[in-house]
Image 1 (cartoon, rainbow, N blue to C red):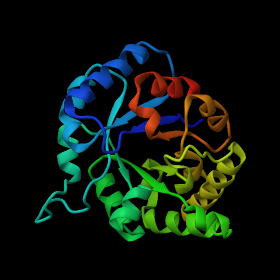
Image 2 (image 1 turned 45 degrees about the vertical axis):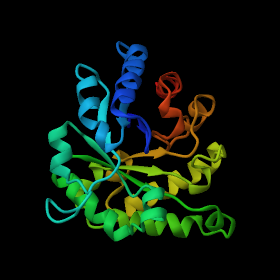
Image 3 (image 1 turned 90 degrees about the vertical axis):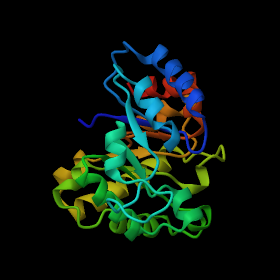
Image 4 (image 1 turned 180 degrees about the horizontal axis):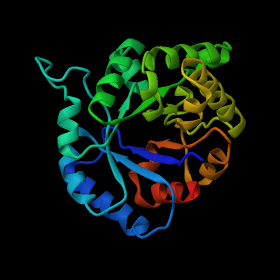
Length: 251
């Protein structure tokens, strides 16, 4: 059985001081919980050192929201995989729809970052998903298939070390959520694609999260679907109670 994974993407929210308070709140609820769920928080870059300290002694892992594919160099404002590792980071979100839409990231760039993350020992959380226009024009399967094949190309056995996050762009921060059936349909498609890219055994190992307005009141139903292995949580991860409730729904 795949261990569910719930990751909080804080996006550009919380100062270092606020990050310390939020992590303390999450820990006050979840520490000591006997729940076989992998839990991750992904604060902004400037919060990572404070967050690593605040998470010491906890089962909660630390993630970053982005990284550069290069090991070093003249890339002002960027951060490398090794820099993240030495900060205490274990996971990194790659190819988020906001990175793709606002900063023009391509599948090839996401693929390069994924390979660099794996080489550094990080767990990449690779995001894919269609826009509302693409869904309404019946292009969901084609768009998601192309993103999966491009972003996760040529990984070999390392594909099993990746997490995939399906996030329908039309459901991110909008309050709209894919129905459990809609989400399961795309998750099943992604798993079939992973099997074609590797083997059925590898595909059955990869965790596929749902991201798109997952909240405490819909989390359990979404994660009860056979191919939904957790959630990549946005807004609901910014409050300790709601994030902890989603984690508990995955138990």
